[in-house]
Length: 434
Image (cartoon, rainbow, N blue to C red; front, side, top):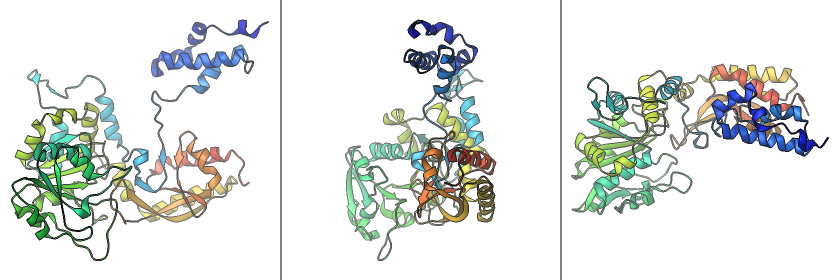
């Protein structure tokens, strides 16, 4: 019989209970495409007609998105390519709760319109009492754009040459600011800027002084900079971009600025990221004097930069909820990490895989705390396992060091050690030592 005549009908295959259930989760178009590919394999003689359903099931994605959950074992806590801060379980639950219709901008008691995202904003204000008012936009770059547009379009922003930084992928702070219609008034030298440099640049066209924390590099040697407290007497607003999103001081990161201390030092406005050391969703935080924040909130550009209900929900849960995964990873005990690495390495060794526990150093990443090294522990494996681990389910991403693949445990919750063990065994294909 001609194999073409034996290809099962599409509607008959889609009626299978397993495919019908996946249609509800993934969508009819996705499931139908998988069936069509399986039918084509029948036409080509690769599989029998009875295998169409199984073949379609095998190629269907596990999730409705192409994004795949990854186990971050790079030793970089805030890995930009891996989405920076993972949300806490509380934040994940909040996103799910906010996925449908919500009262994001509605007063259920009075039946009238209410302030958008008031719960998240109130939580942020409580977390930083030094801020008279707060606002949230979709990332820290957006916060700077809004401030520059509202306060300095057609005017000047005074900034130290040593703080005109590039923060990754060719993205430069000066280019961002100039795009708003503001002019930059550069002061000082690359390595040294004094208060007199700022004072000489202040004039009637000054919109504000911008202090940028150079968070992804360090300058050592003959250097000098001006602190926020010294800039507050110049007679113009002082805006501080602290970058990484610390709301309060972190003893483990003494060189990283925080919002509370920066406002206490006299900054009129602080901008920061939500998805870095705060451990929340991507967001730009604006905290400071009530008049300035209100001016930014009412600017027409603020509407284009506003965050959605899911971000507001995740941010509120992050601010109000339990410790975040980033906080736990930052404070992980090196001795505990070493014991976990040893247990994993021993289990893999018993399975015939060349594995050993080694000391390691983790970093904060995400443009935060440059130069800070966090003692950690890792499982050292042959390099050949890197690709099968990255393409496994779930993908496990480590780093290369000294001709070996290191799986650093600092960013991995202890409850996931079993998943890591299973992933490595699967990546090795049961072959053990080569």
